[in-house]
Length: 340
Image (tube, rainbow, N blue to C red):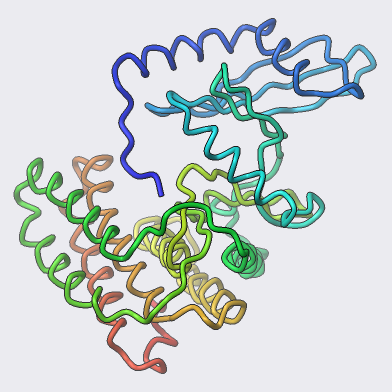
């Protein structure tokens, strides 16, 4: 599982140069012609930057043939050769991912000289943007998509262990305390709880994991629910993905005043459907990874909410500690674990 990759200054410079080049329609058109196949001959291309990170970017290309036919592509370019690893993993997943069903959105080409993955463009709404009546059913469907991934007999990488995740969280919290020393009284009890319960988790066979599973990674087309972005893929306890998803949803419910009052019940929709689909996954482990993810997000809150974090992180810390306490709770206590 790839975490905390920081490109070098040279890699960042080259990435930005590739971005500037790829926004030129003639360059994008040449790439699209390379990957489109004999049944589509694009004549024009319109480029739109979709996202930019320090180590990657995504450009949408809408190509149009002289016949009027249009096709959309997502061009994802990396600062290093990590895209090749994503491509190799994706090839192992292809046979398990029929395009007519809900599931992973996989690349259709990899261009090594460009360090580029090419995806079909998928139109739709992110699951995180949907807050009305379909939400509970879509969360249950998302749980089934996650369960399907976790049941695949694919070894994607060396296993990421519990201790590795705890160590990474500790390193993140060390950076947090160095930058915001006043957070230490909040962070230290959480790290002590993580250390205490991490040694008593239920045994778990590693499985393919998404690594960054959240409502914002699912796209609803109106017919299919598509899971995007394999940049954090790995091989670990599948409870990690479920716990991460729940923690991200919990954080949204905690801090987004625009959500309906019943939004807290969304957590149970996903959790119950997931555990029903994969009963071999430990509910205790899901709670642990929920608490671990909430603990990690304290750093995120401090970084992106410099004026609001003193009011926000005590609330997040309480939720994280409650999740970690559930690890030692009887199973029946955990039935209402996601209630507000």
